[in-house]
Image 1 (tube, rainbow, N blue to C red):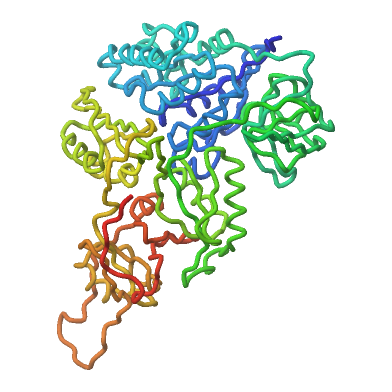
Image 2 (cartoon, rainbow, N blue to C red; image 1 turned 30 degrees about the vertical axis):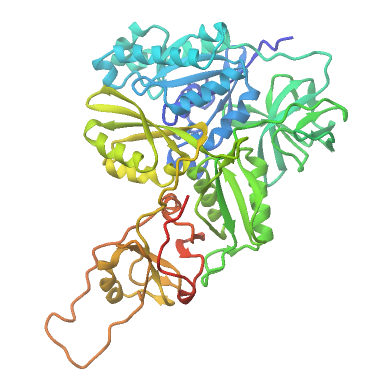
Length: 625
């Protein structure tokens, strides 16, 4: 039977195509906020890191009222590194709104999320967003080309006849209006207040199928997300597929990993139930089939577990995501400055923290390290690791991380295979040569060259995943910040040979102390410095990038000798030409395999794995990544 008064949908798109802005508009126009309430922009991006970086990191739920129908909406990340968030959430919805930029068109992540939605059999509503851009006003045919390319993408991904018959909405999420008729766009551009998002709401309630349930079936619910409350403990988020659950019920959490015959069953009593109204959690007495809600009462839960009213109930298939492609090593902080800024955790505590993260994020996998103090974390990309590291730093923890390593495979013949990415670059035409050279030096192969408009071109490369480590910042430098870059995992191909990790060596402090301007002034000609005068350093800490290929041990704490002799001009202030301030993401891209990043709540430092200068060579052997 169908639950006609509910619709469950997700908003999917490439990064920065306007998903969160569209959800903001739907929440505001559906009356989710009071007239006097002050509502921040991108209200669904509630995390500090999400607001700082301007991207959605984790999938979030909301609910709006469209007449008598309640629409549960899931806002998903658009960055490829967080694709696991999209994959695990698609099982809780019956349809999706696919956002595509009216100028940029379908990009790699558009293909990824659309492919996953079509595989689930979902109906798709195509929303062409940002139709108020200047480029569309000058040339309306570009918008029609985007629709044609998106249709071609549906066909290429094997969409069924029913899925190909998708409705098209033209929208300006920022201005809060949409239309099903492209000819109405000029009038709406002249008067933003003349339109609203009602056409999209009508399409959602009329086109997307309601959830289906079996009346005689008892409670069955699959968990798609986890949260934590200081008052109620572990919170389990998912969709009630069949049956009903009420506060105080005694029910079971059932876990059966793929490939195993035995089930792990935990009995517990439901202490609290919540449902979404707007972006808020509202306590309710019961949840019924079709509802997406929150359940409290069981601490031993994992994403993908089945909640049921009977111990012998059939489990849902485990939520599966694409295999990770990168591995990063985490270890305890063993530097001389450990414990000064935060909590220098022991290996046991670090292990527990990483396992807790893997339990809440199915796209991450935990792996024991080479020693008792090292642990491996397998994931999708550098940004995914950087977000986790920054989160742990803000929790007050101290630890160290190494350079990401690409996960390779072997085929049946024993040949080495490596992950390959499709990288799409939108750049001004003047920078085409430099960008092509950058990608080719990292084993990339140019697949297509397409003129877009306004002197810009779109380059598509097939490049090994290891070639993308550290490429983003260099790409932005080459294009003077005007280039757009995105990538998607294509598959595995034969290993393309060795490549240099980093061309230049490092300047390494050979003793402990505080840096002086006198010492740093004499080191400037040796390379680029990372530290300022007065910075506390220790033996083995990297203080700069050497101008040569090899490492160089230097003394950055040397004071100026005091004498009785004075002369005009010799005792003036020392003027340094400046230092390079690297973010955490840039450090992850920059470090080599013999270096750690020391992460504390206050500082991120680069250091050698072997601190003692007399125990390591300064001659760098080209590393094979």
